[in-house]
Length: 323
Image (cartoon, rainbow, N blue to C red; front, side, top):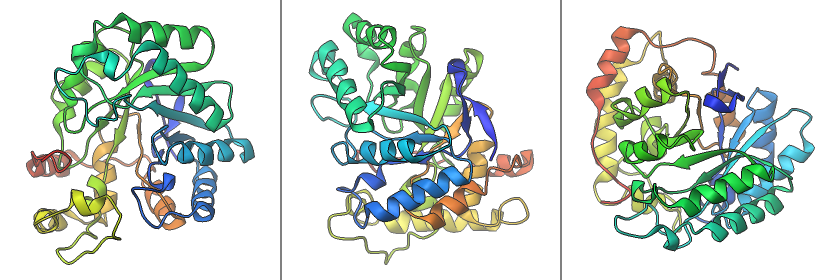
């Protein structure tokens, strides 16, 4: 496992982190705690030291599992979690005032709940789960962050940027209050390369990449006939003819497989790791097979400029979350 600096925090984090949304249950069907703990522990064995969860994942259940891992692990792990928007609107909507989403006392109360769920005294990385740059002048938000840091309840502060809106947090970046951003970045959505990544590189702001495999689309396992469990949220994400759209796009990537990347997931992860702005990637991993396959990509090898140039042609501007 290779490690990178998480921006100005100074923390050294594994290139492949652990996205813990799926182990929270609810929106992802088929998640079982026993299997989740086995996968979490295997990740630690293979060098993963960065785990990203959220208070909203299974109403704190994901946090509890990650906290259990931390208590039982002999290795030091770094935990990032998130404050959900008070109005439960994902993503943040234009024109909604900050006090409906992240009032000062609510940020503090949510952090206190996460501390209880994780059973820790300090959260390594606390993030806001959505963001609007309309709130950048809201002193209450920054007051809450400063207070939590001064009390030793959080070490670092970050923002999880709205889906497919990489440029929507640049004002927040310029406040100097943000230690890191979490953002969607993959072969299809390359928009962070335009403004966010250059700014973060220049100003030592960490980058956590989420949705590296496009919610499964870039694994190559989504086919027009794929069926998800009844209450699985992917039924909505891949509704209508979207599975066909994804399948058609993925077929165009397959000719690029070869010596540099033998599988689509490997190609997708190596594409991301080839960008120096990236600190860590957090693919969802609910079983040992996922853990072993994904962590194997962290071997210090980056894609050639020739292959990266070809992958640039596969940008796909669309938003399956909001459309």
